[in-house]
Image (tube, rainbow, N blue to C red; front, side):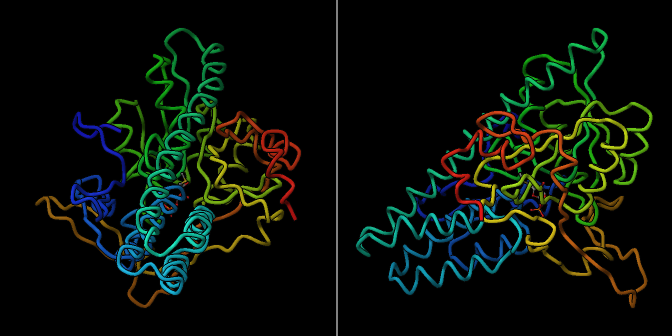
Length: 368
Ligand SMILES: CSC[C@H]1O[C@H](OP(=O)(O)O)[C@H](O)[C@@H]1O
């Protein structure tokens, strides 16, 4: 998307033709920094420490991590070691595993001499595929927004609530939950977005608010716990979120707090949608609550908060006593029964095995 009038993706091959440039999202919204990564270990650090984050972007970044490794050593042992190093970075987003398996599927049969070039080619294809998947989600989600807009008074905005950041910063471009928002804005449909700050890393406050401002989308930053109140007072027309892993039955794993939004939406009759690119579907899992591994991250993410002080210096401050233990569960699972629809690149699916099988018949047979 555009940053100060210039188009960016979140990841690209440097002009040297081999190193990998990424937007280092840790410093947004105050600083826009690009980092150049030159090794598979550097890519692993970037994923683990959330320089880059978001399920689709994590997958693409890992694919380029394999390519960087193949450039140095394209042996079977090196390929397997790269897979292990990158797979160990974050456990929840299925896109990471999917991309690593896809890279190994493509590279394993090739002569060692051909693997580096093939790895860069496949990584670039996965990045381009992500953009097209998100454009498809945008087109399909736009129709939902258009239908809601038709029932509003002329000029009255469609009020959309979103959680965390499932925007272009979580993908290669366009985003998943935000793709319909961007296309609706471009179509001239009046919309307004409630942006959940999304504790503890505040991806909403840091990233989604920055994206919305950059794209001229009217928005309001709210604390995570305000969503239910807004829904009770008829201030939200729809909720749309992203996902890090969706099961064959339509259970949706997403940033912690998503489940609570879905409960509030159900209780208030607010439609709850998920932007779902098909590589994020884990066809081998049916019960998301029981089977999806939930990442637990550092206590520091809960007890320390990043921000910019009055002198313009970015710093961390501690918000709890030093000795206070912290729980930091990075994701939760929203059961399919709470979900109105899954917005995929192929259309809107009911959140069920049948709904997903209707859109993806060639894959649904994989369900356990
Ligand atoms: C388009 S999927 C984005 C998804 O990833 C985020 O998690 P994290 O920032 O920890 O990578 C969040 O769950 C978003 O919905």
